[in-house]
Length: 175
Image (cartoon, rainbow, N blue to C red; front, side):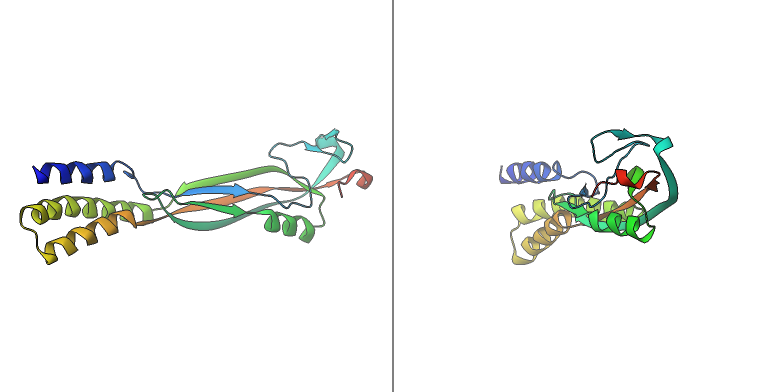
């Protein structure tokens, strides 16, 4: 009877993280310049500037990788304000339009999924052995497998891209 309860416990644990990936929140809380995900951007007076009111300066793109853990639902926050402010200043721009943020799992997560699957199977098998014949060694193996399952890392690739613009009438710049 003890084996059934323990196996149910193991199956409940596994239900909380059946994939490998990480959670990420992209923020831009301290921007000095206007940023838009569309081709239009708001001016100082609250009016919307369209493409005929600015000139394109340059397109940009940069990438970074963020590590986390999918089983424990650890969420990471990344503020990209400084990078976007620097890109605008380096290019003598006034704003960014067409901002895109894309995220994708990496191939390393496939390896981590394999490791996590082995740890899951190992924890179930060693848990059954531990319950039927409890020893210090079998308990250590079970604990090791469960810890490996819970703490398997995961990562995500993030790409930020957009277009730096300069207003034709520079008096419209938001300060």
